[in-house]
Amino acid sequence: MQSKIIIANWKAYLSIVESEELAKEIYDFAKSKKDLPKIIICPSFPALPSVGKILCGRKNIKLGAQNASWCERGAYTGEVIAPCLGELGCEFVILGHSERRKHFNEKNPDINQRVKMALQNNLTPIVCVGETREEKQAGQRDDVVRAQVIECAGDLDPEPGQKIIIAYEPVWVIGTGQAVAPEDAEHSHQVIKQALVDKYSESEYNTHFQIIYGGSVGAGNLKGFFEKDIIAGVLVGGASAKAQSLKQLIEVCL
Ligand code: 13P
Image (tube, rainbow, N blue to C red; front, side):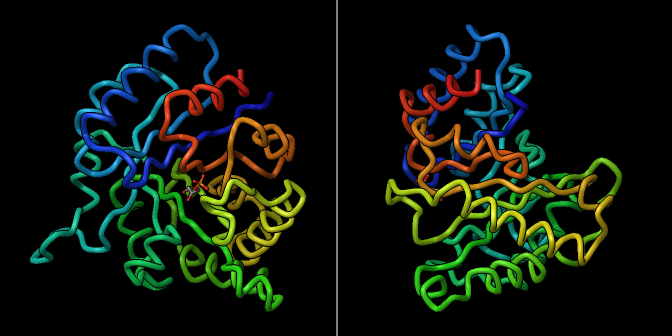
């Protein structure tokens, strides 16, 4: 199978100790495998230092954070700045997740600032977009997704070698156990690609962008998504935060 990415978003499911235990189990499991897919583990902020130490040394396993501030440094109590994430060994950062949009009122313009700050600090942003159930029912899916892509990631100036990952996550399937059909995900990936090609160019798109799917992915449906060329990987929540289901996901890729 062509090399695809699995991004594990552990959300706020685990304590530090539980995160370390899961990381150790995945590290040991990975040690026994020859050809791992590219795996990006995104624990909660407090678990980043120890999970990073446990996983470092495995070539195909990287560390990511679940958010980063739009400010570089300053009097912003409670913010986590991108330079700190780099110092902790993060190479990736999830931005604009629908749970951040819903519970913490993050909007496209400030997500755009976070994406720029991530790139300035050499982190690969994983920019989440996706329609709500109401938007889908109103027939607005493609317009909403296109607008999110353009407003969050339509005016970037990536340096050579820098990548931006766009994660299409239909909000209404997250955490339900019912993913969208691979064909529907493929359609939205095409919408996202077209929005980016319109803003950049086909060759810049190919150089700097990748699009992945998220929303109720598990070992049972992973293959269907990976069979689509345009789907470069998956962003997994619930199934990535338990040892057995994360190992099963990895097994599907071997
Ligand atoms: P689930 O895999 O639990 O549906 O979560 C998806 C998600 O939000 C990943 O960022």
